[in-house]
Length: 327
Image 1: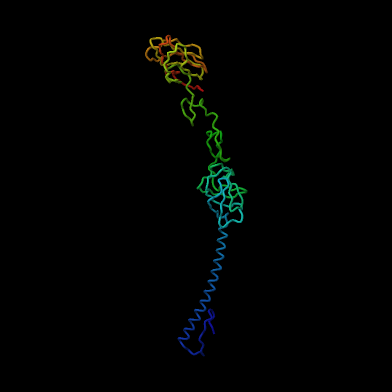
Image 2: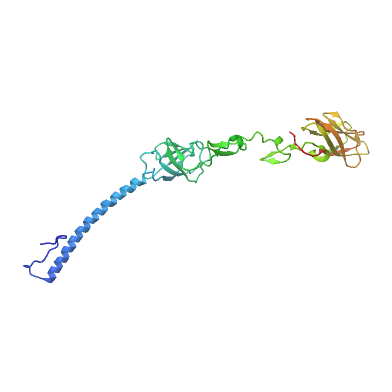
């Protein structure tokens, strides 16, 4: 009779004992039983592995729980990718990270395994402008509704409005990407004279002037010497501030006492008819100037052989307090 578990043969009392034979028989019986059990176990393990393999494939194809990643092909406005294993469909919340092969064009789309083009948009649902998805950089998206939305922030937010940003500069607020329109008050007349604020040079200058020798407006370029005997305008400055008394100064010289100069306002002689000294000299005169007046300097010679030289034509003041706008 055999054993209960493995069915090994037992030696009964009526059997003739032979140690070698019986030990060999026992060994063969044990080996046969163990080998049979191992084969059964191995068959079970293979089945289990096949089941696991199926689960892995199902797991890999679940792009909602486990987003895919791929380098794109196609164009910058119509990206394409191929995933392996290929998805049966592109369900809600389908996730994918793309690495664009080319920087995007306007309103780009993504087509996965030929399932149809789907719009790529930022997290706020705004279609991408040109150049927002850079070649070689990873971007992760989730399908929400009919679009692929960025799975992370789209670069900014907040309540800054176009009229509060510098003209031509881009930024992102809660409404997506915007372009600055500039501040209507950012004009030269609202900025202190010669101060640069975001590229706008101010013309706002102190008011409450008294006459003085501090140059406020200059036309300093030397005027080539002339022998003209005709009264000729050689310098001009437009005053756009309020009416006030200003000091007009210039450097001049003449030859042999025959060179002359005179300040005109709007083409009308107002200053002194000066005989220019033979050496270069700074000449000054205080005149009441009205808004938008043209302050002009005319010169001439009494003889053709004489010469006059003029430069550093300036409007000068002694600044006190307050402001005035110059256009």
